[in-house]
Image (cartoon, rainbow, N blue to C red; front, side, top):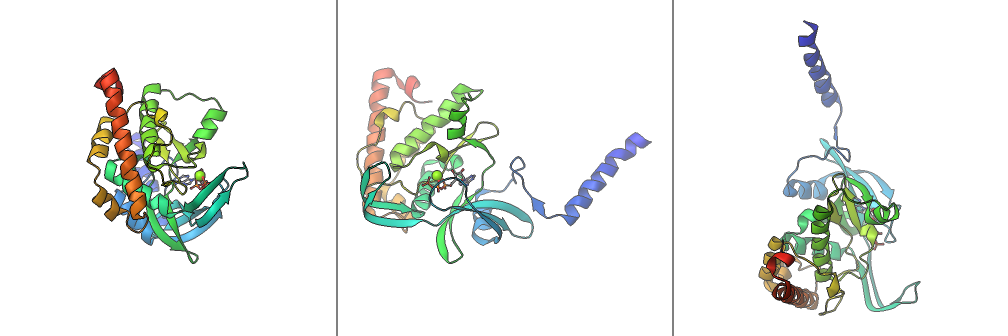
Length: 274
Ligand SMILES: Nc1ncnc2c1ncn2[C@@H]1O[C@H](COP(=O)(O)OP(=O)(O)OP(=O)(O)O)[C@@H](O)[C@H]1O
Ligand SMILES: [Mg+2]
């Protein structure tokens, strides 16, 4: 008798808890929302709490949002700095320097076009405390790449890891990020990888930053890259990229495709594409 009744008791407790508590998702308990639902949540949910980020230099804030049913965190990055010449602590200078949240939104729109968006959090534009910025869905991160390197941890499946890393490398060459540091590569519980923070990407170069970083390419990504259309890219990134920045992305796309085509001719398709 008791054996039969216990599961019912457990179920009742669960129902009771859900009835009195709003749905709060923890890092390991991600809500199953579609990308569109996540976008709507980020655009409309109320900010119920906020903390200044501990990492990074652009004054990002970790916000807690709630729509009454779901509560989830998001990262708000409002930076929009422009300088004719920027001098860094290292002594390096950069002309026509831009550090802008707009490039996060441009990167996400580009990622959606070439199927890289599953390796990024959803980004939307949102105003908070009088500032417009990018707002990204907080990911269930266990550590970042800087931490993994520091702790000398090896992923359990090196092949699966490399396949993700190769995709990140292709995207990094496409967006020409001046600051692709290891805290911008985030690692999930099952060693899935995400790439965040493009506020210093989209530099005005038609050349690739580090072509040697290109080793192999995901087949689907390669096809999508080849099919990337300048007009569509301009349309989807309109408020965030200038016409020249779009042209630079397209020029780098051509270089990436040509680079892999040369590698394929030398090594054979199966050694390069996967
Ligand atoms: N969507 C997210 N999910 C989980 N963690 C995030 C997310 N966005 C940011 N973070 C965390 O917050 C840190 C700082 O955010 P972000 O990289 O966007 O800005 P930043 O580091 O200040 O910019 P910069 O790299 O230009 O200095 C990240 O390194 C990461 O640890
Ligand atoms: Mg960062």
